[in-house]
Length: 364
Ligand SMILES: [Mg+2]
Image 1 (spheres, helix red, strand yellow):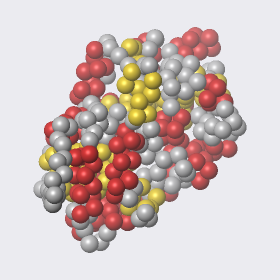
Image 2 (image 1 turned 30 degrees about the vertical axis):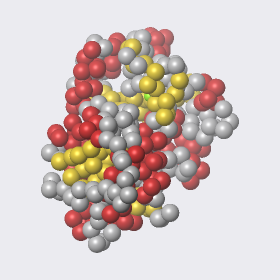
Image 3 (image 1 turned 180 degrees about the vertical axis):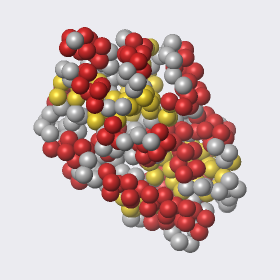
């Protein structure tokens, strides 16, 4: 396997195996591929600088703490930060059902002048499409407050000045295509390649578009061998071609009956055939956190990350140097949090975000 370089290093080695880093393969920073390498090395420097800034942060400190504290004084937490970043599924809604008390809680936080941001690793929708989902659920959330990993992929390409004459091959669904289009990038693949089959007649070979300079891989319900081969050819044969993953989530919740193979399964297939580590733009990589901090001019110590998953949401917050709150309204139970084998401890935990209201009332 080709060696890869860890750019974001703000977490403890004890959890280094938790898929937490922003990986960059040496090939991706090869000096031979000038158009990307020059821009990319700037981004690397930016990342390295930010990572260094993050090092002595609460992420490492929080790992020393034995256990998370049960939230008892919501006002104290609310008053200690200016921004709340919320994961969506398991925090705001479950599937298509709003979690109890969410609208009132968000209203209260807005009234107190808090900035609210909604972050999701789900790349199947664009910001606009997510905006519609919020609207359908009766929540007043603007598109500019929503950060999906589909948007992060396009934002990342913008951040490195990815050339507009290069194309992006997409293994993923509509959300990624919409965000690439909005960012002005040419793309191919996506749902269009969902029905394609390969007929292995003697001597058959597939040819990839030589102008593909990046492959973006996200969750894809129409994943197939054609896409694996096409993406593999681009990454292995097009000089300097980037391999970008929207996330590496092991599982996702397509139905409430069981866990389903997540975006990590598609990423894993391409990793297997290319032997290249992807560059991850979704949680728990710090790209979105850095982007948010830059975009809104927020200090990371003034952010509280609220999520229902330890290995993505809480780690994302800790990697970014933020305060963290785990809610038990999603995939993590109290026994999972308190299991001795769990090394990821948030600052606080509570049942659901509307506890902000009852815990406030109790303290007034
Ligand atoms: Mg969640």
